[in-house]
Image (cartoon, rainbow, N blue to C red; front, side):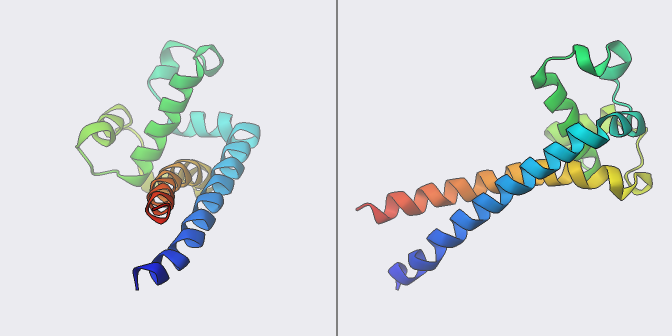
Amino acid sequence: MFDAFLFYALPFSFTLLVACALASIVSLAVLVLFRLRETNQALRHPYLDQRPWERYPLSIKAAILLDYFLRLAFPKSGFWIAGQANHLLRHVRPADVPTRIKWPLVGLWAGCFVGLAAMVVLWIIVLITLE
């Protein structure tokens, strides 16, 4: 019975991983190529008051985009990273942010997090089937 589960779970987890990777790549491409300036102007991260976007290293740029995502996805959270993002971006009202700005951020980070979970499940299934 467990073999039947693994027979279906392995291709499903791999397909989910590939779908999440493609969603993240497409969302990042749209965000970087077409919507980055508009997103930064609409959400106005406090870090951008200190320096322009171009002067930050890639890790800080990713953190800013993650803060945007956490504010839009978990607007009432006061816990951990989401709470810090909500504190920094308290001037942003998620209901007023247009979908044109939301979907690349949600697609990027949700694809990363769901893909990470799918990858862990995939590796667990692969390791189980090796014995």
